[in-house]
Image (cartoon, rainbow, N blue to C red; front, side):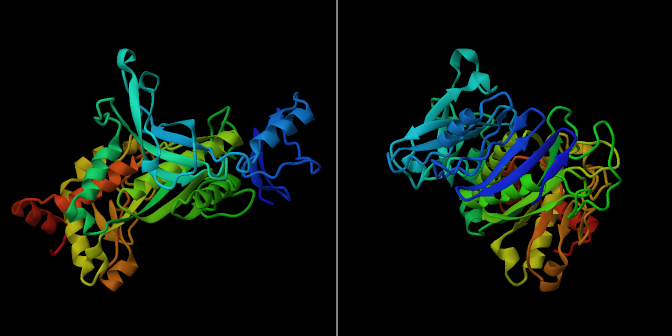
Length: 431
């Protein structure tokens, strides 16, 4: 059974006859109490609780039984967890609401509101921000018919607030020129796990470093992989929720992981990444581990964390698509600064030209070259059609911004003929 061992914490996953896989931490002040078989309640929650050693065993069992309680035989009402993006543009917020019956579409849910002055999104004298439900996912924490609701944010007058990046993205994806091309996205979300009390990568000696990079990428073993249980728990939670997660792997820097979402069409890519991030935040919260999306969490000879975005259109996926890909690359080169400015905070610390990145100041592309801004795979070159990979986005990028900007630049924006000719010559593109 896999375990995460770190100087300050240990994470265990257990499967019992009366419950589904459970995730919980075991720190120096916490302990797991097994659920009593006698009188136990079969629950829908997939995650169990941990309580202080000072707590009474029976008290812990009673709390756990309530958390696992299946209320569906007694009421049609469900719990909807409304989720939105806070004032920093990267922090997630949520609160719960009782809904009278199960729902299948966001339009069946009521709008709600919250105090924007407490999230940095509204002044205190006029603090009400309105939540508009936009996407629904199954809730793996509460189970049953309970749901997670991805929302975007508006003023009481119905105007999107500045941090509502979904609104503009939805406009771009609803444009007929974009919609007709059926844009696909596959997003590779890298993240780093930190020990809670010292904010140092999981598994690393406190205040010191493990061995140099090399054995950790997709590595196996107690001396090479730290955080696998969290990655696996997140993987299953995403599948349960209905997120289009396509895989996971350990990353080059130890304590760093990646999950992939897609292929997803249009606005769906952003909805799925944000919900997947929310699940990861909740799981690490329960595990007593800190999640960071900082693009360069450890300075020095360590890989940063990106959010590589694979992109294709219908024309790119059809015969002759490689020429369409090269035209898209040309457009991307001409708007390099616009994209960099929208691709995440602190990205200049990551895009140095080292550690599998291109320089932030120079646009480049290549086949199978991970040191370029845009990479094209060997299979795409061979088939003459396929997709491109934008390797510039940072791990803390907003997927609504990145996906819609890629669509806008390649499908809606047209450069001047002079600029196009100069760029094609510079990049050795014959388009």
